[in-house]
Amino acid sequence: SHVLVTGGSGFIAIWTVYQLLERGHKVRATVRSDDKGKYLQDVFKKYGDNLSYAIAEDLEKEGAFDDAVKGVDAVLHTASPFHFNVEGDPKRTLINPAVNGTRNVLSSILKHGSNVKRVVITSSFAAILDSTRQGHIVYTEKDWNISSVENVEKKGKDQEAPDAYRASKTMAERAAWQFVDENKPSWDLVTVNPPLVFGPILHQVASPEKLNTSVGFVWGLLHGSKKEDDLLAPAGNCVDVRDVAYVHVESLVREDAGSNRFATSLGPFVYQDVVDVIHNDSNVPAEWKKQVPTGKQGAGSSVKQNELDGSKASRVLGLNYIELKDVVQDMVASLADYEKRG
Ligand code: NDP
Image (tube, rainbow, N blue to C red):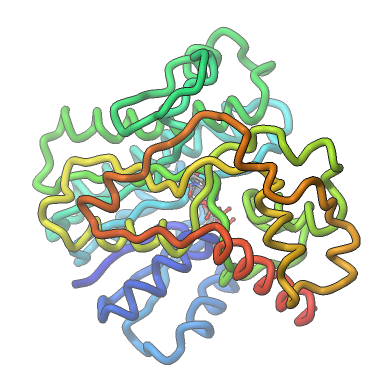
C-alpha cells in the first residue's frame, strides 16, 4: 500500500519510513524543506521510487496537506513540536501547531484522501500521565492527562514548557478522537503513546544542539550534564525508537488494531540504569565515559516510580520490546558514529 508519513525528517518518523520501505510499502513523506527531503532520498536510495517527498512547511496552514493525502491508503501523522524552548507563549509554539496541525491533517484526509483506510497518530505518554495523581501508578491506555490541559487556561503564558508540551499532546490526541466522532470518516484511527524514546539515530542532525529532545538528554549525559546525585531520580519510562516505529507500522497493517491507543513502553528507568550500560560497554569512547558519573551499579532497580504498561502492544501487535541494554548501547554507538562523521 501507499502510506503518507508527516514530519518524515524526525527521529521517530525516519525509522517508521525505513520499516515501511523494508516491508515493501510505498512511502510519501512530508518535510519542511527540500534539503530534508533530499536527505531522506539519499538515505533510502536503494528503495528508488518507493519513496517520495512533499513539502508541507507549516502544520497550521489550511490545506497544507491537501495534495499530500491524495491517492494514499493510510496516513501516519507524526509531525508535532517536541521541545521545551517556548519563546514567550507556549500556546503559539507548542499547543497550536500540535492541535491545529492534527485537525488540519485530518481535514485534508476527509476532503481529499478518499482511499485512506487508517490514520495512525503519534501521541505520547504525555497524553496519559497526570502529574497531579499521587502514589505509584501503573498507567494504561485507559488513562488521560487532565491537569496539563487545565493549566493551559489557568497558567497561560506562565505554564512551564514541559507541562505545556504535555498539554499539546493531550489536546491534539483528544482533537483527533473528537474529529472521528464528529465526522464518522470512512477510515479509523490509532494512536501510539510512547514515553521517552531512545535508541539509534538515523535522521539528519545539523549539529548536536539540534538533536531531538529525547536523544539530546543522552547526548547531554555523555557530555557531563548529570551528577552522581541525579542518577537515582525518577526519570520516567522509556522505549526504543525501533519499537515505536514497529507499532506505527503494525497498527497500519492489522485490521484489529483500529480504534485503539497503544502505550508503547519498555517500563520505568533511572539514569543509573543507563550509566551502568555505558560503563560496561567497551565500545563507548573513553573521553565520554570520563564525563559520565558511575553512581552505584545496580542501584537503579530499587527506585519506585510511575509505570506505563506497554503490554497491550505486545499482546495485540506482537511486539517484543528491545531491552534497555541494547537500547542504550545502540544509541550511544550511533552517537559516537555521528560525532566521528562531524
Ligand atoms: P523530532 O523533533 O525529531 O520530530 C518532530 C517532527 O515534527 C519533525 O519532522 C519536525 O520537522 C516536525 N515538526 C515539529 N514542529 C513542527 C512545526 N511547527 N511545523 C511542522 N513540522 C513540525 O522528534 P520525535 O521524532 O521524537 O517526535 C515525533 C513525534 O513523536 C512527535 O509527535 C512527538 O510529540 C512524539 N513523541 C516523541 C517522544 C520522544 O521521546 N522522542 C515521546 C512521545 C511522543 P523538522 O525536522 O523540520 O523540525
